[in-house]
Image (cartoon, rainbow, N blue to C red; front, top):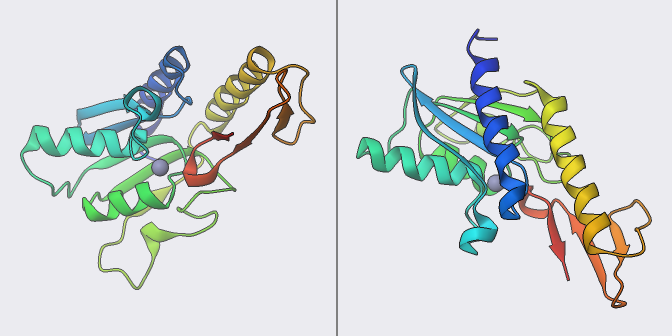
Length: 185
Ligand SMILES: [Zn+2]
């Protein structure tokens, strides 16, 4: 592990902590190149109503714009949760050299859980991957967020399996489809 990995992951966690006040799932990302932070963000999916606005995609776009180049060779992307297939694809497309993530996402992770796209041998570009950096901080943020959401949005409390019955008799289902927790009406 590189010395600075913890520091950048803390920075990503700080971004993640800001997300719930905007109704966003607490996931944060930081993009670093040559010791410089090019971009940092949490999810913007709710704020922008954009299904592609995962934290990873947001920082990749911002960094490419700042550099005036879509090629991010040499960059390291830090993200608090294992990226989904879309974000793993964006990481590969942008030629990012290294990916460091926090908690695994067994339901939708594409960097070792369900798939392992960054290390897929059939692709030309391969990404060096390191997971499990401060995973508990990330997990606790996620768990706290969804506990809060369940207790404020729905009555009575659900059955603990991500399924909750709402006061209106409407059921909400929470899942990690597409890499991030989301509610299906
Ligand atoms: Zn994603």
